[in-house]
Image (cartoon, rainbow, N blue to C red; front, side, top):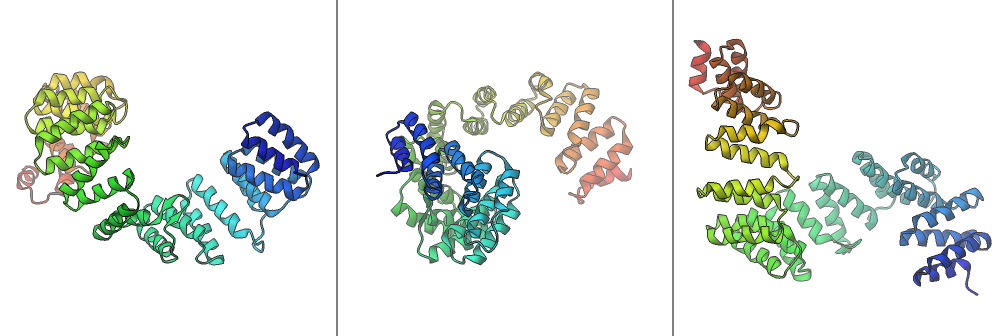
Length: 415
């Protein structure tokens, strides 16, 4: 005779959720606590969080609690962003318990969730001491290290997994992750070799794209172009293929193809701000100024990277001495602008001989650009022109810390 727990799982498989709810109530009333624990774990695994929690709380209230129940309740509390509850449940697991390492894994997840990766790493290392060479722990440490830019550590843990003969774990390819970590360390040759081997096993868009980017970094643009074209021609939804493809084509002086790819990419995805920016840079380089402006005006309609688009467009206008256009573009955007925007606006006001307004904008820009030598030189000279010699002295002395051999500025300061 099947239990109510088994009947409930069968009802879920048949998508009969009303019946499943009724059977859950019967399971809570008639099935023993061991069966309920198994049912709770299975429901949690299947994503039925509320139902699993109901079972675990029932077991808690009836004092029929296994260690696994505390761990499961902690996992649910993390899902619900109830961090204090999760910590309370985990504190119930003693260090002598055989499931203590499992509780450390959940604790690591908790601390990573609340953005304390150092404590997450400490919990995982404690678990690894208790269970050396445990793949689950090694994988968690590798992924945490990769996520927190500790690439040498990530390489070490991924290599330990490889040495255990593990190439796939938690739907993740270990050679691919190892190659990714190596590439971040600048170990391009080893990373390329791993990705090329991985490509023979797994010719996915992701692997093709990663290898193509590595080829670009190692100057093998033609190989990169071939892989990126393969992604594109397969009709992939991998939309970020166009920016690296266009960049590689430009580097190889295949300019007509680059131009065509910019247009094709924007037709496919008219919201690709990075491609608008690249298209504008490309058009400007080859003196197609109206086209360069049009790309940026279209990009400005999209909220993503709007600050950068504003700066690029203002720089385009400044290069053409269209200072009125800069003011019209930026004057009402000052809440959105970063310090680069204030610098652009200062240059525009200066070009329009509105020196008081220029001074205000230079001062705002100075608050964030006091380590930018080009700005310091320009601002210092502006202050001298305005007769603010003491302020100019301070700013230009800051500039000379970066370029002490600038004789023109040195002579100005000793006059």
